[in-house]
Amino acid sequence: MPISYSLSLSSSILPNPNLRPIQFRTQNNRHFPNLRIRSSNLTTHTLQFLKPYLISQHKTILSGWLCSAISAYSLSNLLSKFSAITTATTVDATQGFALGGLVIVRLIANYVQHALLWEASLNAVYDVRVHVFDRVVQRELGFFEANDAVSSGDIAYRITAEASDLATTLYALLNIIVPSTLQLSAMIMHMLAISPALSLITATVIPCMVLVVAFLGQELGKISKKSHISIAALSAYLNEMLPAILFVKTNNAELLESARFKKLALTDYSAKLNKKRMKALIPQVIQAIYFGVLSLLCSCSVMISRGSFDRRSLVSFVTSLLFLIEPIQDIGKAYNEWREGEPAIERLFAMTRFKNKMVEKRDAIDLDHVMGDLKLCDVSFKYNNDLPLILNGLNLHIRSGEIVAIVGPSGGGKTTLSKLLLRLYDPTSGSILIDNQNIQNIRVQSLRRHVGVVSQDITLFSGTVAENIGYKDLTTKIDMKRVKRVAQSAYADEFIRKLPEGYETNIGPRGSTLSGGQRQRLAIARAFYQNSSILILDEATSALDSRSELLVRQAVERLMENRTVLVISHRLQTVMMAKRIFLLDNGKLEELPQSTMLNGDMDSLLSSGQGKDSLH
Ligand SMILES: Nc1ncnc2c1ncn2[C@@H]1O[C@H](COP(=O)(O)OP(=O)(O)OP(=O)(O)O)[C@@H](O)[C@H]1O
Image 1 (cartoon, rainbow, N blue to C red):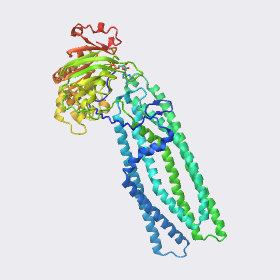
Image 2 (image 1 turned 90 degrees about the vertical axis):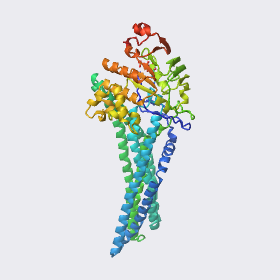
Image 3 (image 1 turned 30 degrees about the horizontal axis):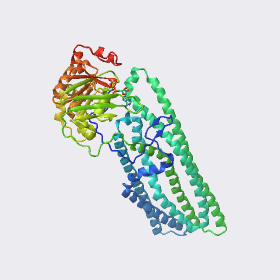
Image 4 (image 1 turned 135 degrees about the vertical axis):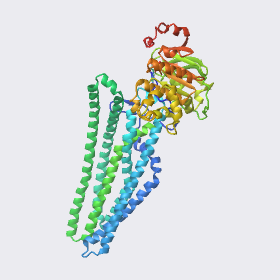
């Protein structure tokens, strides 16, 4: 199995012993490890998660709330003045100006309130997104490689779409905490002052509505969770299928994929439809409040006819009642937004809660320079306790500057060994030493700076040729002289110069505009740029034609002088570069005499191995 990670992918391990694993189970019972949340604690967990992000936005939020106070105050005054005007026999210009002034103040305050609360919500979501992304890339490789791992499409969906949903939820929440409450209290006080009896009748309507909205909101939360899972599954599918479009086409699988897509899209359609239906129902329930208003108006009429309620009070009371409905609607809406957004928050939150098995020691050291002496001391490894040993008591000493090849049948554990060297996994037992230093005592970033990999599964990104070669300096400054020098060493310079914009040519998603051999040479150039003391070549020359392979081999030999190189290959030609050759089979390492290679006796040596036919 080839290694499918980037050469200079840096990773820091930041375990948090306080975080407990949580688990999710999806609709189709797909099991996501470490992602379970107890539903009783959902809201508490979710709020706890959001708290620091909201606190960091306190200035913007408080300013927004201040505007809402101004808005509520102007509304209160507006209502008094409005009812005075509507019942007065004459209206002077000052009253009109005062009324107009209050309307303008309220509109401006409202605008600034909404703008500031949106700003705070979006800022908080930006921080959440960055935090979740950082935590995701800090997760150990095992999380991404496990057979029950969360797919990259699902992760992408959480960080993009679900994080966007969070902004709406946060905004709704911030908008009710103070603004709606203020308006609600202002209107209630106004109404109480006019008629406590009528206010009491109103008060009986509100709790009934709140209860119904709360119940529907809970139902909406459940439906919404299904909808989030179904869209995430669709996104995961597309993320996996589209990069494999060449395979799909060559296998005539368009119809098959279309059927798979339809099935997932249909599940999402049903979930969305249920959600939309529920969302359509809730406002209708809120509308029912208007029936309450209506009945109150009837009561008022009766009271007026009895002469117990003057016209001005009636206008004032009814207007307050109408403005009371607005915050009630907002509260209902915010509650539903919260119930709808909660699954998204949980799923985002779940990505940040983990404890890596592989922990970096607090006193781990940074290595400035590495000679490249590499020792495996009784190294055994299995991917997890239920699986068999892949490596079984390996002992090997590769001296600094030595080129050593490891061959063996497919599935023999060669790539696994290189993963251990990079500390993507820790050995189950035994130790790996670089310059007599256990790699578990070295900072992971430092280790991976000194150990480079060129894999047959090449990772290129959309961007220019120069950016791909100088990837490790992407966020600082790429040394163009060095880029060109290493490209020459990897025999990539010639074809790069022929590209429309040379080193500044954009190579498309995953380097799709380049041939296999060109992509391979770019990856080799990148390894040269990284300039590690230890280099792992995992079938690195497999995609090159025989001319390029010869040139690259010479370049590798020249450039890797005084450096340690571990060649992992099935290919006789590549292996021939090595001074010593080892066979990795059945978890055991055995040194092969050079004559085996020269005489072409590899086949007989591997006659029992399953990968016999892979050597040529
Ligand atoms: N993430 C994983 N979880 C569980 N088992 C794994 C994982 N990765 C690899 N394996 C298993 O470990 C064994 C060794 O795999 P590895 O990729 O190291 O072999 P390899 O010698 O590099 O094979 P090839 O030459 O075909 O690339 C295989 O049986 C494989 O199924």
